[in-house]
Image (cartoon, rainbow, N blue to C red; front, side, top):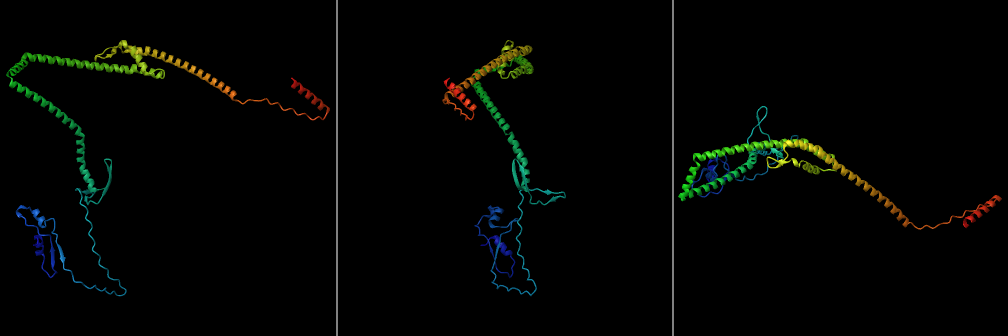
Length: 389
């Protein structure tokens, strides 16, 4: 049995002398209750065309009788053969649908969006040849990303608030449990209830209220006095620190720089504490300090006593270092002299033994005259005297 779509297609085809036509459709579906199915399901099951889609109909025609190949038309001499018909061109590929809707304008108005691509850098990342519609989508998503970033920044604060709320909730629950336990005790013990009522009336009496008001007023006055005292103490400490930083510390630092290599800052600081130990008093906060009224005396002792002590200690160490250097130089000189003497003695001990070599006898001059004979005789006598001596 053909489907309704195939039947509709067959009945709507015009009757003519054309070859027989066969409509191919899908297999006939199983029977279905039409009252329990929607229009869309019915259309999908029976391939009923909707307003957005045409029915898929495949038409197969009878094969045409074989025809003999036509003979090529004769072309007169001197004429070009007729041009063959051009093959049907394939339709151009349809442009992809943009992922978001937007409009592009120039100076005259809206223009058609060309296939543009954009390369850019954002968030430390390189984007190469991104389609224009995707760039627009990224711009549309930027506010949402900003909200996500703000939410991420607020997350620690929210977590802290949740923790604080949870802690407060636990405290209130514990207090509620204590109150419920107290209520149960009061209801179960009439004597305890009577005592609680009497205690409450006692605390709410005019006398008790007056005593509590006086205590609260005294506590407030004491708190104000403590705050004032702390403020004055803080101001005094700041002034003392400024005085020490401008008039005392530079002197100590200058001594350490002046006698570098002979005195260090730790020695000067220890000596400073020793010189000012008798000026210390108990401070407002319970710690020992030098009162602001005695800071000029501290400055004087630093300028005189500490400076003199540093100079004497540095000069003594410098003299000791000079004496040590001289002693070291003398020891080095003696060591060098001893080394030279040892080298000479070693050279003498290791030198080869020498033997005396007699000088060559002088050659006698040839005697040519009587004077030569006299001189030769005298030379023999002189030589004999030297050998005999």
